[in-house]
Image (cartoon, rainbow, N blue to C red; front, side, top):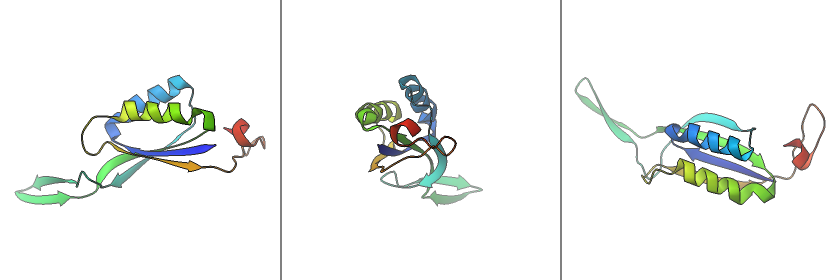
Length: 112
């Protein structure tokens, strides 16, 4: 099993979620986060004063999938989260040893 953790633009969440649902992924964790990278934040003017905002709002999606789905899901996320601009985000992949469904005790792929 693999855990896919991706950081994307908030405006891309609906597109990514719809594509993953269509593929058959219905379990995911979505968190609103703040972050910075190459995008380097933005400048805002409030009452005549310029402020540098270094941390921008992002969305973090976490999904655990069987190994056989990994490449397909990464492709879906890359295609749907892509805008071509700096700040599109990152995808991280981790190996998961086991998963256990608390309610039934199912383990491994069956627990997903």
